Image (cartoon, rainbow, N blue to C red):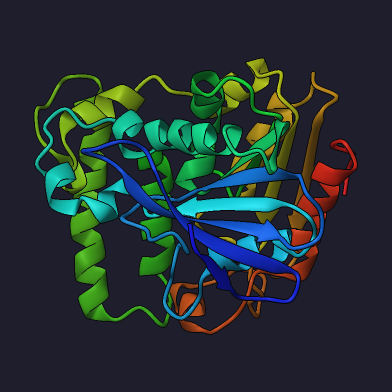
Length: 311
């Protein structure tokens, strides 16, 4: 592994996680000060994301990696399987979220657990958006985690969130007629998901095979979250239109019987925890260059370093 010097307080190493035929290029960001570190694995949202989770000019996972490593925490991020092996994944007729996301979190955990610079009892997972939605499943699959961070995580059925987002964006002044036409088609596709999940239709909404939607048909993130025992940090940008306050409140209700869960929302931050004008972001906000708010990074670091106390 070769060092790529990227900052005074941290360094980066290129490595690979997983085995053929699904091995993935990855980056491990390490603090320069110290010999052993807690570590966190970053899990992407939906779509074929790169390791930085690049959105327009912004790279929220790179911001997290550099910010957390500067605060004494090692960070592992990697290319998502649907990006690295796009054609092969698209050809799968039995695709589920296990192949898309969960399996590779286990591979990342194995790499960190085998690294003598990583504290073996202090490995965490942060799931963003869809990655956060899957955190209860990830926690079941990866034993030995020290805790989890749900970062703008949805708690409702995917089709419900999709339909809400489509309705919101369709009504915005910035949305063109051409985009509204695309959104109308997406709405028709989203309406098929529940039928496919129940086995009433055998089609591929959004171009995703029926196996994927059937796998998620009975999945209730908030209910499984309630049954978890791991320490958890649940964060949301209050200006996020993709993951709403209703999603946050469901996790909050699921944490009502747990003393090791911390929940926090941040005014004026969007789905990527970047500053946006107004109380609710719009798609155009993702085209504005920005960085993950430093207060969010500081809160995650403090939660890990202080034994999961409220930031």
